[in-house]
Amino acid sequence: MKKILIFSIAYHPIIGGAEIAIKEITDRISPQEIEFDMITLRFDKKSPRFEKIGNVNVHRIGFTKDNPTSSDLLRFPMYLNKIFFPITASLKAVALHKKRKYNASWAMMSYMGFPALLFLWFRCVPFILTLQEGDSIAHVTRRLRIRLVYPFYKMIFKKARIVQVISKYLEKFARDMGYRGEIAVIPNGVDTSLFARDYSEQELGALRWRFHKEEKDIFLITTSRLVQKNGVADVVRALPLLPENIKFLIIGTGPLEEDLKKLAHDLGVESRVFFNDFWVEYKEIPKYLKISDIFIRTSRSEGMGNSFIEAMSAGIPVIATPVGGIVDFLKENETGVFCEVDNPESVALSVNKILDDKNLRKKIVANASRLVAEKYNWEGVISDMKTAFFAKI
Image 1 (cartoon, rainbow, N blue to C red):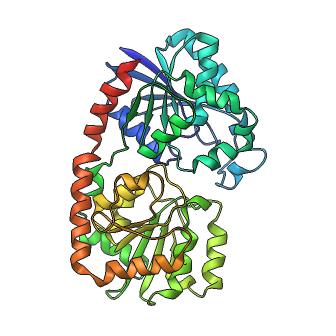
Image 2: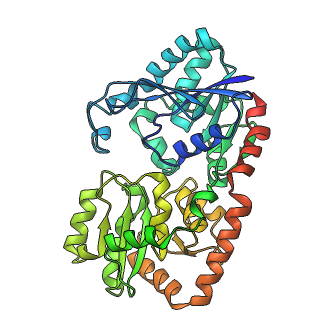
Image 3: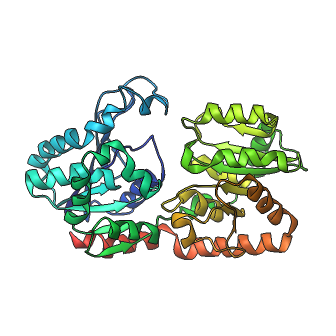
């Protein structure tokens, strides 16, 4: 049996693609094969300092506040948690190692390579690295906390035992950063039992009623953090170019939420844009997809984009931009439709293209659903992770 210590900046209940991947992977690996511990930030005072989530023993560190917003986490003093996490996490790792005797640590995203690197230096514990970055490589390396220690950042890639990436785009990133070893290209998966299943008309009808969706209405939907790189504003700007029965459902929160609400008001489309006014649990997201007609995210960058393949599994057509890891699974007119980055007119054209061609729409949905079932199911991903990644420890 192996023991692996995971470094992750966030974990449940705060979730994104990386956090979902950790949960899905660790839940499917028996504790008799690998025991997982984790060090992550605490963020909220309500979160316990220690708890077991699935097969992971979660240790939370850092100072907190009650019910922090996404904006709070980006401002002083909460942002200092991220700055000092490599040091505090590596010291916590040393303390845990006295009892647990880890075989390796697992850095979830490149910034988590810093505590893994320090742990390697302090206790000679090797580390494995997963790249899940959604921001552009230029954006990642421009961050002040990276620029100030850039030689050490590159050392993360040189010292990693093995690197796993979720797209070919991130494979190139690892090579550009100087990694010369073996790379395992293993995408994130989708829980098809959750996203591809059918829901009762009673469940879906209640959601349609909540958003006043009439039979004539067409719902665009995005499940996105409301940050610059996800380009949600371009969809709002496209609405005046589209018929009034086309509306936009936004499932997600983030620092740009108020800016997006103001933009919708200024463009006169606020009655056509729906923001969720409460936290939507991950397991509830498929229902929102099922009442919608087109999934859309006009990303400026994307490491892979779990939300796209979740929408494909749910059986709705997808509009995306040809950036980052998206091009690994979205092929024009085969598994989705592309639009241009930063171009609301292109967004409107792509929406109309799908709505005006029923045969194209049916072909895209069928091809995309089949692709996800064959290539992006978690069972296949776990098999690859065991043989191509964890076996290298």
